[in-house]
Length: 68
Image 1 (cartoon, rainbow, N blue to C red):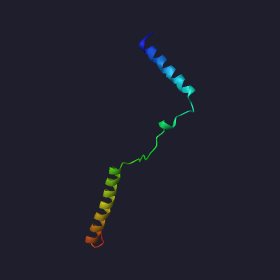
Image 2: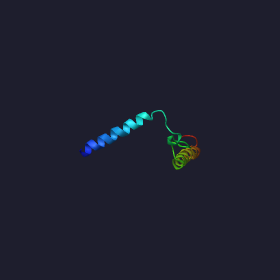
Image 3: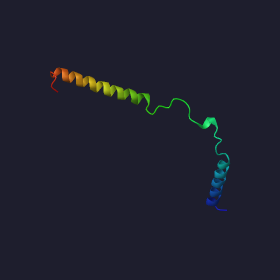
Image 4: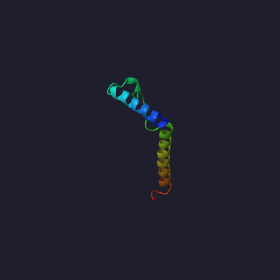
């Protein structure tokens, strides 16, 4: 039996074994916990940029006499 045929047979065997287990997913494989889409460092950097740019704009507007 060639190597590719052995690998194919192993893959088919694994697939057929999974078919029999369909619908009985254990609870441990599901993700639990706080999974934030953005990390705290990136969130802090974003807040720093937004607040910093707004403060800069306020100071620039105040020093130019309201005419930006």
